[in-house]
Amino acid sequence: MLLAEARTLMAADLMVRVFELPTPEQLRLFDSLEHRGARRTDITETISMLTAGENDPPVFCGVKAWTLRSILFMAR
Image (cartoon, rainbow, N blue to C red; front, side):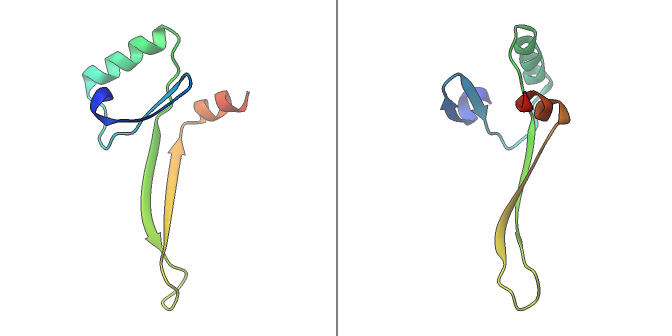
């Protein structure tokens, strides 16, 4: 998953976008990286089309959600 689905690499940060939940083996790998000082933020993302009414054209929108722990870390 990490090699096949990696989309972006910026400076010292790594962002991996996948379209499935991690397997137990992958979660163990993430946990081992966290024990060595890495920080991980899981983000759930969905996209859809919305409209304000019957006669209004639909617009593309995206919604992302992440944990409160990661928001508090990013705010420091």
